[in-house]
Image 1 (spheres, rainbow, N blue to C red):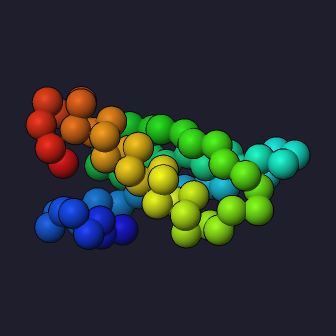
Image 2: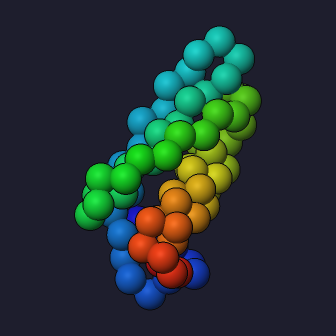
Image 3: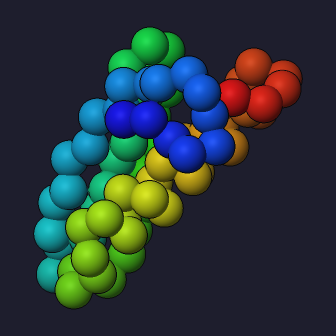
Length: 69
């Protein structure tokens, strides 16, 4: 997956699981193995859930590396 804000492509793995009225979306950075998870409404668009997960993953990677990713 290539993020619009970055020129460096990063591979991100997703697994969307529906739990009742919620969707659980882990996002894992393929290079570092760092994982974050977001919860959203089960009826939300998959693209929006993934966008939210990628934004959270980018923030976590930036904190982990001490700079921007």
